[in-house]
Amino acid sequence: MDMSDKKKQLSSTIRILLGIFAIPSLMLAYMIAVMAVNGDYQSVDYFEWFYSLIGILAMYIAITGKRLF
Image 1 (cartoon, rainbow, N blue to C red):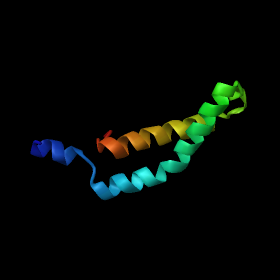
Image 2 (cartoon, one colour):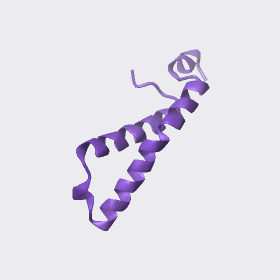
Image 3 (cartoon, one colour):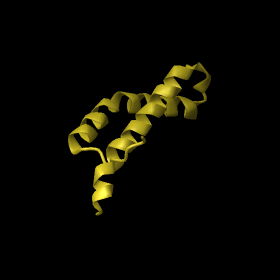
Image 4 (spheres, rainbow, N blue to C red):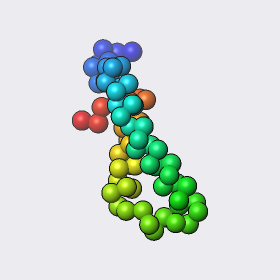
C-alpha cells in the first residue's frame, strides 16, 4: 500500500462510528425493500427513501474507508 493511499482512507475509529450511526437508516432501507416487494412502496415518503440511501452510502464508506471529498 502506497503512502498516498493511506492518507485517503478514514481512520478505523471514524469508520466504526460511521457504521454504527448508519444502522438505523439501513433498517429503514430494509423496511422499504420489504414494502416494495409487497407492492406498498407508494406509501413511503421521499425523505425515507433519501435517508435510507444515505445510510447505504455511509455503510459503503465505513466498509471501504474511502473518502468522497
